[in-house]
Amino acid sequence: MQSKNKFVIIVMCLMLIFFNSLWLFSSSISNSPIMSKTTAKQSSAASSEAAELKLKNEIMKVLLNRNVDIKTADRLSDIYSAIPDSIRSIIMDIHYIESRYDSTAVSKTGDFGLGQINIKVWKEPKDSLLCADYNTQSTIDKYIKALALSRNNKYVALSFYNGCSAYVKQYEKLWNEKIDVEQIRTLRRSCL
Figure 1 (spheres, one colour):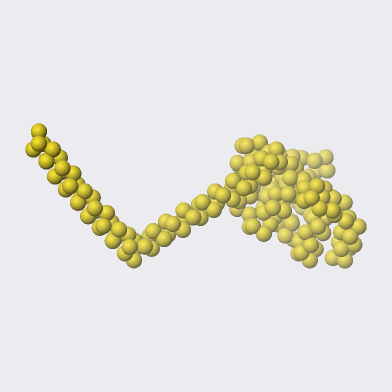
Figure 2 (tube, one colour; figure 1 turned 135 degrees about the vertical axis):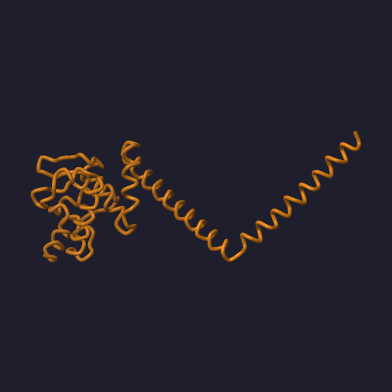
């Protein structure tokens, strides 16, 4: 019995020495320049994935707080996460005000999709405008053009986007700020 215990102790010591050596060997390899570059790339990729996941979760939270169903919120979070940070929230707000995030929304005046793009004015295919990806890109394009025309005034840009200064008033509650429609009209006229 005692020789069996000695044998177990010897085996355990040998295993400990083996695993300790293996650990030392693997840590020396991971500190080599080749492994450091690989590890840095993996770390950077993991960090990027974590940031992307955090962004999608933040977008999901906004959408769910605005009573968007989970399936639609999940689909739209993929689309919105690809939009540049500088305009993401305004595009999401436009879609909220225009269609309440309904990609199949059609108005009586011929406005289609998330951004309620008018097919008569913009001459875009109806079927394409009902596609969330296409409509989002179209919304971005039109908003950026309106922003340039408005000399980077988001309120005036929104009035150009929709074609009406009074329309901007709808953003008051969403942004929790007072919007002066008369001032927007004046600024809008000075941009034309």
